Amino acid sequence: MLDPVRAITVVLLFLGPADPPSRAASAAYWRSDRRPLAKSDDPRRELAEFLRARRTRLRPQDVGLEPGPMRRVAGLRREELALLAGMSSDYYQRMEQGRDVRPSEQALDALARALDFSAEEPGGPGCVRRRRGRAGFEPEEVPDTTLRLLRGLASPALVVGRFLDVLAWDPLGGALLGEFTRRPQRERNLPALFLHPEAGRACPKRAATVAELIGMLRTQVAADPRHPRAVELVGELAVHSDEFAALWALHDVEEQTRGQMRLNHPHVGELNLDWDAYPIPGNRGPALLVCTAAEGSLDAERLQLLAGLLGAR
Image (tube, rainbow, N blue to C red):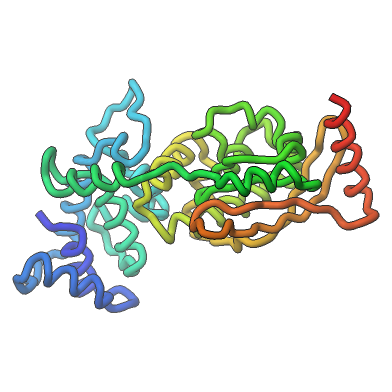
C-alpha cells in the first residue's frame, strides 16, 4: 500500500498534471523509501485503491468529526474527505473511481494532508505523531496586559484567536455579540456565529460576512493545516453547515487586517462599523480586533448611545 507522498508522486509522474512534482515531495519520497518507482500499468487504479483504503481506515473522530449513531460506512464518507481536502465531492469521487482526471499538485498535497491527520494503525508511527501533536497543543491565552487594555477602550473590541475563536472582549464588544458571549468557549467562533440560521436578522449582509470570515479562516488553516483546532473546527462546520462546505471548497482567502461589520442591534438599531486587527506583541496567535465608526456619523452616535445604556445598568 502506498503512503501519501508515494501516491502523489505516482500520479504526478504518470498522469501528467499541469505542474511537475515539487522538490519537497520528491525528497520526502526518497528519504522514506529509497527504492525507485515502478511504473504502474494503471496509475489511476493504483491511486483509486489507495484513496479507498485510506479513507475507510480513518475514524471520524480522528479528524474532528462526530461519528453519529446512524453511520453506515466504515471510516470517512467520500464527501467528508473531500471537504477536509477542500475539493468538491464529485471531483474526489471521480478520483476514487479511477476515472480520467488530472489533479493538480496542490489538490494531491491537500489530500495527502487530509489522509495523514490520523494514525496508520493502532500503535503505529502515525498514532505516535498524532498523540504528540495533540499533547503539544496549548489553548490560546490572552495576556493580562491585553485584558487591562480591553477594560480601558472606548470602542467595541474583541481578542480573536488564530482560527477566529473569540477569546475575550470589552463591554461594548460584548454588547455587540449578545448571547454569543454566554456560549461555552469552544463554541465562541465567529464563522459559527454568522453561519447560524438566526444570524440573518442581526446581520443584513450575512452572506458576504460569512464568505469573508471563511476566507479568513482558510488563510489561517492553510498556514497550519494539521493544527488540532483547525482540524476540529473545519470538521464540525463542514458537517453542520452546507453553506460552509460550499464556500470552503472555493478555496477563497481573505486579508485579515481590516474589514467592515454591519449589524442590527436590538437596542440602538443598525450599525455600520469598520474593524482593524492588531497582532498582540509576543504572541503569534491572538489578535486585537477593534471596531470604530466615522467621527460625527450616525453610527458613532449609536455607539455612544449603546455605551450609555451599558453604563446605566
